[in-house]
Amino acid sequence: MTSYTVGIVVFPGSNCDRDVSWALEGCLDIKTKFIWHESSDLSGIDSVVLPGGFSYGDYLRCGAVARFSSLINALHDFVRTGRKVIGICNGFQILTEAGFLPGALTNNKNLNFICKDVELKVHSQKGGWFKSFIDKNITLPIAHGEGRYYCDDYTYKELLDNDLIALKYIDNPNGSTHEIAGILNKEGNVLGLMPHPERACDKNIGGIDGEYILKNLIK
Image (cartoon, rainbow, N blue to C red; front, side, top):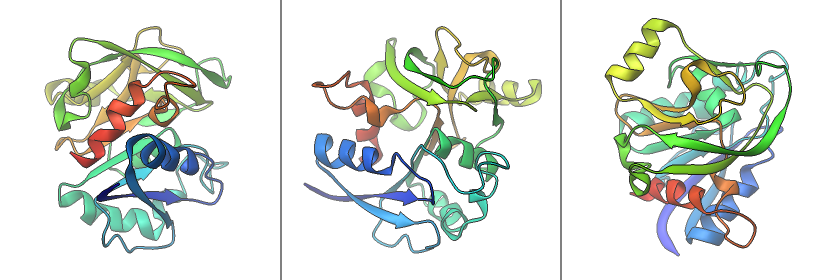
């Protein structure tokens, strides 16, 4: 097992933190450490995952309360060091609420919960997250009710001009602006996406496209 350690943030209500740990340790042999959201101690942590599921306060707006946690406050300095952070589903929502990434996640266009595999087109190689998928489409599962990415025209132009659109849906299932499924910060070390890469890391129960994404947490 690598000496590299990935911190997995745990919020009250999180339900994908164990999935992420299994994907990293069980499939990729990468050491993980669970970090309670009230902690601000990121010493010994080389990269961070904000997992999917739910965070406390989501009944107000997904990620609206979690953004004020001690861990999220500490994450600003962590990101400035260049270390990598990935926010998956609810983690993506928290990243937008906390200002790490632009735009917002809102209710799906038909106000329904969607749970299925989706095909995605890789649009950016910034940060090296998707270097295994140059000119290829990938398949990952989604499971969300508020996964519709929205941004205004100015923000969309900024995303395009700075090559920050990581993924787009081939068949836009939730009505996201310009089919956007995942975006990056300008430095490329923060990735937010609605699909779940941790659920596509075991060839015995599904695809392994997610494995190629998560392993880049240690690159």
